[in-house]
Length: 129
Image 1 (cartoon, helix red, strand yellow):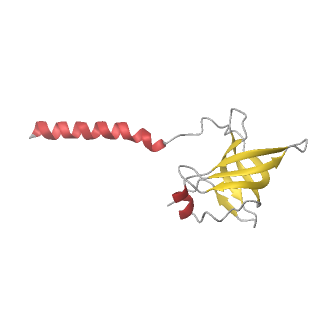
Image 2: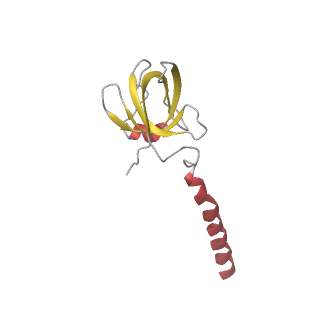
């Protein structure tokens, strides 16, 4: 009996050891987290989907050229629990995105906050208690 209990404990400990890293999902290694980038632009698409919601905005650069940016948020379930929904952002809305830019210098932000057209600030990766 002691042998079976010891073996079961070892197996359970091994499973715990293997599964804990999967809870981390993925980190911010691909983004420059040393500074927050702020962009104001016109929404071209809003996808309230899993595994991550996406906001696409057209932003004018210093030369007046329009660039399309992709902002990544948390998953739809977490966002919904924090007050988001699929209609909170509409194509044509002017929003402000705050987030970390991709290190590969692409037009991608891992968002921290979004300021909606009505001025309300929303967390992009809310922590639910």
